[in-house]
Amino acid sequence: MPAQAQTTATAQTFDSAALGAELQRWTLARADAAEPRPGARVSVTLGQLDPRLKLAPCSQIEPYLPTGSRPWGRTRVGLRCTSGPSFWNVFLPVTVQVHAAALVLREPLPAGTVLTEAHLTDAEVDWAERPAPPLAELDALLGRALVRPMAAGEPLRDNDLQRTVWFAAGERVKVTALGRGYRVSVEGQALSRGLDGQPVRVRTEGGKVISGKAVAPREVEIAL
Image 1: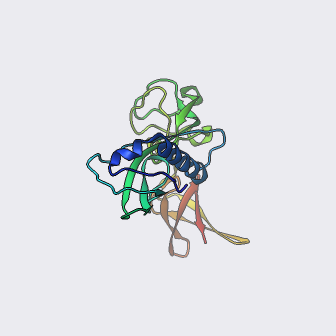
Image 2: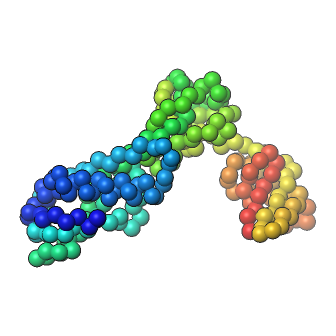
Image 3: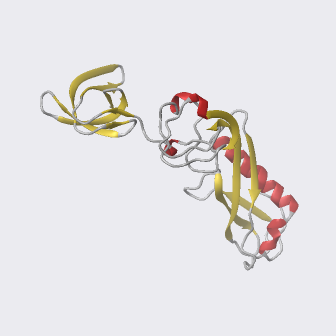
């Protein structure tokens, strides 16, 4: 785009088939580019402007993504008039759905259930429904416990699951510092339990306290 469409003076203009189809194509292209998923079915549903808006006629409307917006899930597209008797700027609500395969529950399960392969099956779900994406790999799910009751067919996201505990406070751990072309490891004592991917402090044998990220059984990583 820009869309080349003459408007009337009200918000109802945006219901026109030509402009609506152009906006759908514009949003769809940006959704595909922002977070591509091979084989996904992407659809765009346009919302409605406030019918109380009174807009001046416009022969050219330019769409844009507002700062901080992403073309997934419930979002909005900015529309500004760039050719008309007066310039205006409004926001149109849109819903972007991205349907692709992920792992879902075979049956309803209570909070605290430790997941096994028997609990899971593949299904097509909307990846854009929530900010956190669904999990599609078994390794990311097996052995982890649900933090809330979940229904059959629900996709699983990282925040639906308890994080793996790689070590307890007080355990001996290996701390590895990774840099370009080198790797240095030291031993130390964990000062808190190591939750997968979370920050943890370690006291080295020399008494220095350093911070890293728990990544594996009794292993902490520092990226330099």
